[in-house]
Every structure is written in structure tokens, then in C-alpha cells.
Image (cartoon, rainbow, N blue to C red; front, side, top):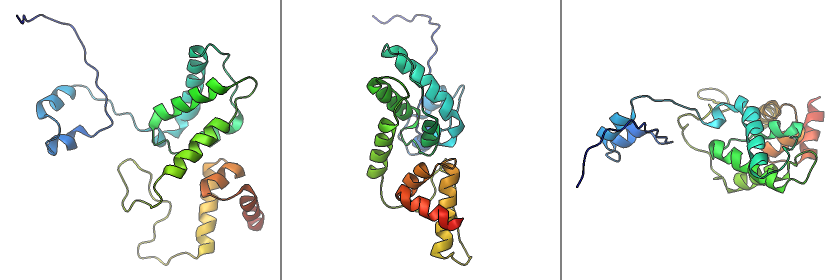
Length: 195
């Protein structure tokens, strides 16, 4: 027989879905949505707060080392630049799994970038080829927009892309080249031409 009992429980729920939209589509119960909305905290995706990458990386390095009973490895300087240049479609869990994988393979000395580069290359290779036709909520604005303006020449557009890649890579040509899908040598040549 069911018997009512008083409880002092607190329920914490998290989702990456827009519950109001799901409710409007009839895919989520209205009464449950109202009960869950008592106190809401919005945490932006990692791609919208890349300044958190070094702090989170350090935290996950310590956590992985402790969990795997290893000494915390020293991250190379380029690691933070490499990670900040990546969009993290898997959000913080993706960063955490990359770090755990790297630490589990780590033998000693400076942490290798190989695991991170492999993961990023694999994810980018599996990403859809075509660009989205419209901007999604939370995504960064397009690099350049040309409504009603004269289109730039290929040379001008290339210069804008190279400048933006170098900016996002904190001046690291190797990482900028990776972002643009060109070789380090091709990037170096473009930078020399530019002066």
C-alpha cells in the first residue's frame, strides 16, 4: 500500500535541449517544465567561452592523473592554443575525454599533442562538408557578410581568412594552417608573401 511520506529532497536536472520549444511542439510536458523552472542556470557551451579552456584543461589533467594514479603531466604551451582553435561540438565532456585519453597514454615528460591532434583531425574529417545556410542560436557570427556590397577578390578573401586563422591560433602558423586545411609550408609561403 502506498503511503505518503515527507521528504527533504532537492532535484537537479540538466539538459542541452530547449524545453520551452519542446513544450510548444508537444514533446515535453508543460507541468513538468514549470516544476523544473524554479531556479534556472544557463551555462553557455564551451565554444562560447574559450577563455575557460586553460582552467578546465588544468582541472581535467589533475583529475585524470589522480584517477589513473599517475603524476600530473606538464602540458606543452601549444596545447591551449590548439584547443582554443577547436569548436568542441561535444562541449566540456569532449575536452575531458581528450585529456583522459592523453593522460592514459602519457609516459613521462611533457604531454604529447598527438592525441589531441588525432581527435581534432578525426572530428573535422567527419564534420559535414557544406556550410549551414542559416546561423544557429549560440553560434558565432559569420566571418564576413556581403549583402548589397561588392564581393571581395579571391586574393582579398584569402588574406582575411589567413589573418583570422592566425589571430585564432595566437600567431601559431602550424595551428592556423590546420584550421585552413593547408600545409605548414603553404601557410609559411603566404605569410612571407604578405611580408
